[in-house]
Image (cartoon, rainbow, N blue to C red; front, top):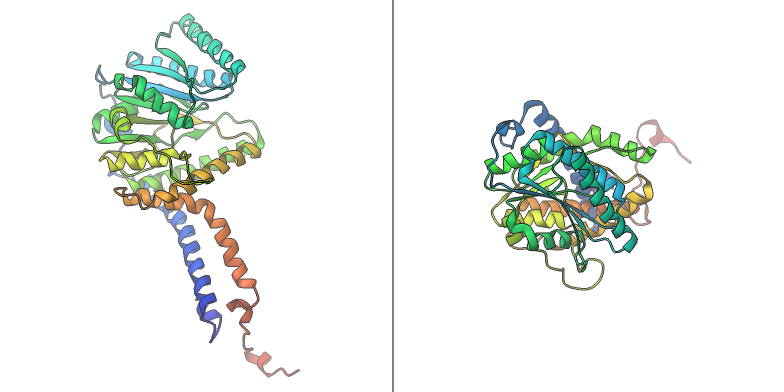
Amino acid sequence: MLDGAAGPGHSGPWAVLQTGLFALLFAWVAAGCVTAVMGYVSLRRGDHHALSPEDVAGRPIAEDARTAVVMPICNEDIATVVAGLRATIESLSRAGSFDRFDVYMLSDTGDLTLRDAELAAWRGLREALAADGYDSSRIYYRWRQRRTKRKAGNVADFCRRWGRDYRYMVVLDADSVMSGDALLTMVRLMEAQPKAGIIQTAPRSCGHDSLHARLQQFSGRVTGPLFSAGLRFWQLGESHYWGHNAILRVEPFMKHCALAKLPGKGGLSGEILSHDFVEAALMRRAGYEVWLLPELDGSYEQAPPHLIDELTRDRRWCQGNLQNARLVAEPGFAGVHRAMFVTGAMSYVASPIWLAFVLLGVLPGSPATACRPRPRGPASRWRR
């Protein structure tokens, strides 16, 4: 279409390049649109190929199915951390089966003052829960002296020390909250699906008071269910893992999901920042499934309250997704996870590609500027 619009004699390299960029960008936009449409269809009609919380409702949990709820933290607002943990623990206690769970605060905090505050808050949490009649003996605090590999290293250190004591592990962020019913449902699904390595929930944003955060919360509430259901429709057992509000099968995670540094120098080498996508790909390569569970209620998180915080996080995501693009050709990865690496990089590469596409249309000598349309109708008889 673009090639023909440029007119005869303008089908050279410029037109080919512009047409190629247009095709790539159109496919990128169309993929998002189709995913949302299929998400709508899936929500309306259901998806009998996917995991469903209703399939395991009321299923008993084996006594030896112990689960660790871990929250890696690093220089966080300790009041937010403790409030989220307390809400999660109280909900889990009311739902029953808390005796099969242990809760860990895994600290990487380097500031001594903050570390003392964390320790005091942990002690206060245990005392407050005990005073209210809850079992607080299963709540632990660990400070890591050698901070390596960031959050992934924090979780890996926990697995090396205590992972063999647990069949499952629920990973939370510092601002995560999960209901007891949601946690029990996730464990029941893992028990019912022995080949499930990771089950990822779709957390909802909550607890915001700034305009920016509330707009993000509204956007996620409106579009999130559609896109999550659409992703689940395409990916099935080869889905995303977002690093939090998810349950993992500990043994294969320890055996197959260790992360090495990317070779080379510069920003796209070294420690893998978006480690969760890579861990999902490694889990699937080992023969275990990774599922997204968008319809599970009771999974919450907080988004960055201000634009500066949003940009800081987005910069880290940008670097991590561009790093992951280096792993597209890694042997043994499923095609869906290779596509995830590509689409993750496209989330940030698409903007400069759009700029290049526009510039190709306005630069001197390009097909668009070289095109001189021939007048038709009465205008064709006009003479200067």
